[in-house]
Length: 290
Image (cartoon, rainbow, N blue to C red; front, side, top):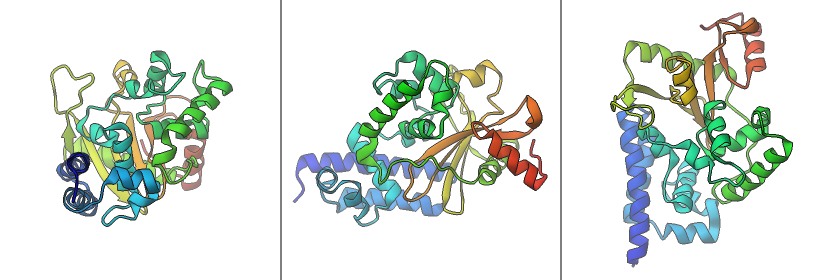
């Protein structure tokens, strides 16, 4: 028989996952992805064992082994157990506050947290760790090798329990990211995408940011226009596109696609931080997307 504490915590997790399923459905994600979150929510609400006990005794693998719970949902459950909330749900609602999240990491104060969001367009701890691995973090002014190592060490401790492996810095193929970007901007222009109401930089409460959920190969993508201070400051709220990606067995990541204004790629859409890779792709294909 379930205890009241187990029911309450399992019930909270089930509610969070059900809310994710509802928002994914409203935002026209694939029926398979919607169904996965809905089935997991129903199982947890009605038949699952004590999820905290499973997590504390057998870790992420124990959650992954439960009926209806795959790798991605197991990581979501672990995040809820660790923090009481789920960043993905806040993002789908338009209520994520990345700067506050980053300040939970030792050595990161308000200024650096703002840099991470404004300049690298990061929104999750997993994305921050990926930026440390692929070198983007070390390029920020005021963040030297020693601080990068310190942040990596802190993130490893914070995230170790809720991921299957250490991050490898891999991202989807550049051509897949650019395809998602092109599809998103085209559909946003036609007005065929569902929209969300961001909490930040939205004093009138406008339902104004289109969101796209799509899949290419093993990768699942979510794309939306950037809502960072710099995007507003430089008038790029209809240009900078943040692309979130995940696949089974890998940590969620994100990147930003922008229109380049200088150099040989001027006028082209490029994946920020991966300009060289974008240039090689453009050169090999002879294709330009503007």
